[in-house]
Image 1 (tube, helix red, strand yellow):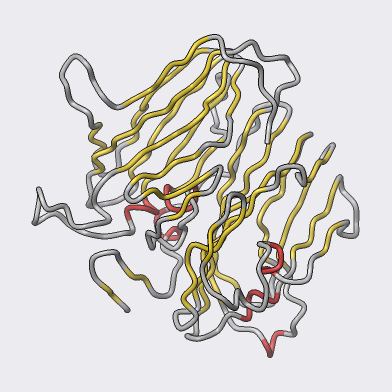
Image 2 (cartoon, helix red, strand yellow; image 1 turned 60 degrees about the vertical axis):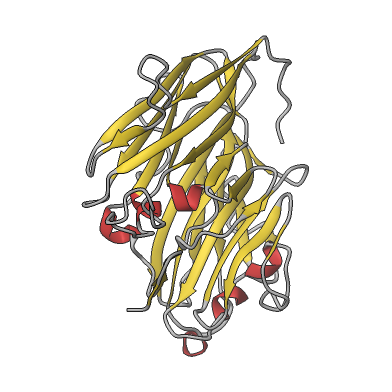
Length: 332
C-alpha cells in the first residue's frame, strides 16, 4: 500500500489515563474533544476504538440503544497543523459498515472485530497529528475507548498524506453517485460504500459501473461493467456476503435492498497528477430505476495535506429508508 522507512521508536495515543486509572473518555451529546496529539515525523500505523450505545449495555440496563450513534460519532484527523481535517467521517462509514448494521469482518485495512473497529491504512505526518471526535448525537453520551499506535520514522519529503472523504445522499436512480472529486497529485486507494433502495427487494442500483476521469479528461479513462463488478463480485453478489483482505461485502439483505461493500487498491492504485473524479453511473433509463440512498468514504493519498469535505449535518446522516439494530429490529 505504501512503502515507509523503518521505525525509530513506537508510541501510542490512548484514552487510558494512567494517573486516574480511567480507561474511557466521556464525550457528551454535542461535544467535540481532542483524543490525542503527536509530533513527527512518523506515521499512524493502526487506529482502534469502541464504545457502547449501539448495543444493550448490561451494566447500564436503562441506557438508550440506538445504532444511529455509529453515524452520529464523527472521527476527524488533522495532519501537520492543518486547520481542516484530512480524515472526516462517521464511525460506521470509516470502518465499512455505513448502514449502521454491525457485522464482524476483517480486511487488511479496516474491520469490525466483534465489538472493536480498526483502521490500518498508514497515515504519515511530517510535523504533527491530531485525533478528534465529534459527538453529534442529541441524546447519547459516547464512552470512548481508543488506542492509536504510531511510529516515529525519518520520512522523506515525498511521502504522501492519507485522506478519507465522506459523502452521503439520496438519488432518483439515474443520477450519478459521485464517490470522489479529488484535486492534487496522488493516488486513489479504495473506498467503503453502503447503499439501500427505497422499495423492497430491489438491487438495480448495482447496474451502475464506475466511471473514473483522470487529470481533467472529458471522457472517463476507466469504465467498468457494474457496481458489484467494481467490488469484484458478480450477478448482484449472487452468493451473498463475503469478506477478503482487500475487498468484501459484509452486508447483503436483498429483501431490504441493502448492501455494504469495501474495496482497496494496492498495486492497482489509480494515480493522477492534478485531479481524479469517480462516480457510479447507471446506464438504465429513468423508467427502469428506483430511488436509493448511499453513504461512502473514499481513501486516497496526496502529496500534501488537503482538506476533505465537511461531514454533513445530522439530518442528512440519517439517510436510510429503513434501519435495523443489533439488539432489536425496527422497521419504520
